[in-house]
Image (cartoon, rainbow, N blue to C red; front, side):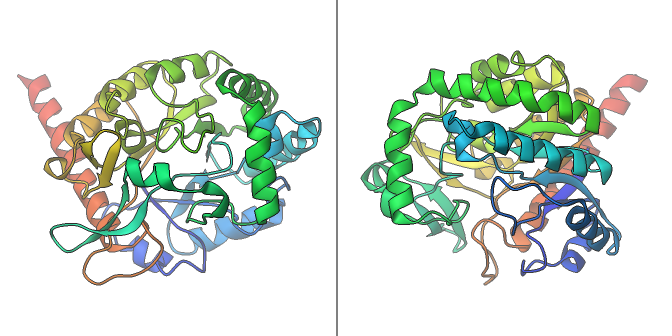
Length: 351
């Protein structure tokens, strides 16, 4: 596995110099963040970003993400122009030697939480999802990190109304159209695609969500039979639905050679579909992180893995879920688990 870390560019309070000091850190997960959704990324911007990372002794392992324009998700008549721009970005990423692109197909909203600074019993602050609170929210008036904030209130209202005509099957149809257009380009460019699951993995605000569990992933990979049509296996996202066995989903996709990126974070289920984001340590949440790492090692996964959302600890402030300290602890923990799994397997083989 290749340990990696999310970096939000030069405006990120967590610097490349900070990240480089984390033991075992190799890769950076980042993006060109100031180009509007639907416009192609110029090669020179990608190469500048790459050079900045490499100047600090690391390299870009994954672009997270190249956002998908709503016209593509909605299947509007103008979607082909945005798909063409997406293809141009993929070609330029390939020219720059970027190996993986993470993206999602969630309508309008990215990851959603009800509280971004919930105080846990140990005094740290974490992201949580309270199902009852979310059900009371009006998405037309909300603004949360991870969401596209470029929409005016009028545009948001129009989008929400437009999605009333898009059910899950229509969204699948639009995803299939997109996949069949971009994966041949990704193959030619040498860029593996890795779709991220919906977070949380079920419908919210009446909007369809389709990348929700093992059955959905198996349907997805059949849309285009290629290792370039792969997944970001985010165990925390899948485990947010009590119906999902995140480790079993991971093992299944590893066996089918479709895991192109791994997000490793823990969540603590607290009843119904509510959950808290916890420390990475297995006993702190509902996911056995040892089994996650063991599955990756035994499955021969050699791609990028990153500690995902972290708590705010030791008085740190910053982008919710993306502070330095707790994610650094997570990376160190994952490194330790990998070493233990590999040494245990080696000992068993020598018997």
